[in-house]
Image (cartoon, rainbow, N blue to C red; front, top):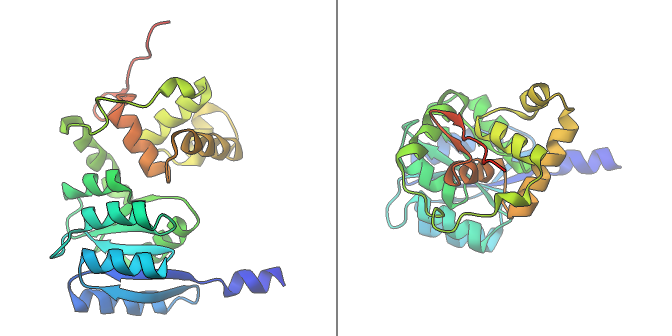
Amino acid sequence: MTKDTNRMRRISVLLADDQPMIRTGFRLILEAEGDIEVVAEASDGREAVALSKRLAPDLVLMDIRMPNMDGVEATELIARDAPSSRVIILTTFDLDAHVVDALRAGASGFLVKDGPADSLVEAIRTVATGDAVLAPRVTRRLLDRFAGMPSPTASTPPRLDALTAREMDVLRAMARGLSNAEIGQELGIGETTVKTHVAHILEKFQLRDRVQAVVLAYDCGLVTPRTGPAPEPSS
């Protein structure tokens, strides 16, 4: 009974792109998968926000550059008004400067449009489970942009002393782009324990996922893209 219920559970997806051919291509890819259902399409950010509020899809595939309202503003509004819907940003360029803004706005990751179809499908499944996705080949270069960007939270940084020493270690490792398995290996702890620490970090700062945790780590100066972990304050 449980297995049948799980098998019938489908991930609902909203496609938001101003190019009809792009939307058609994504729809064909996704609807070939038995566990994914495209529930609606939007041609701009404003329509994507309205449909997200009405349909509450599990996930929104959001083009970053659209007329009327771009993907960054749409993502921020969806994160605020339709928090059960997660957003994956789609961009033509893997170093699109607006991607950083979209991640800060609440996106759970980004993908490059010319990536393989199986990566898109896997990303949707990953984000639907509550995790986050950053295209591996550009994660480091993308986060490197934080070094030269003003932080919107710099004037009122969150209190990192709410974290335990081990949680700080995990957050630093997350910000360096390490997976849970890699963090466990580096810190000498089990992957399940790493997941528990990650969950505690997200809960303490009311973050949606690990992407937001990485943004927080860079905004607070806990790590810097070019130099790695920031020096620990002397006690």
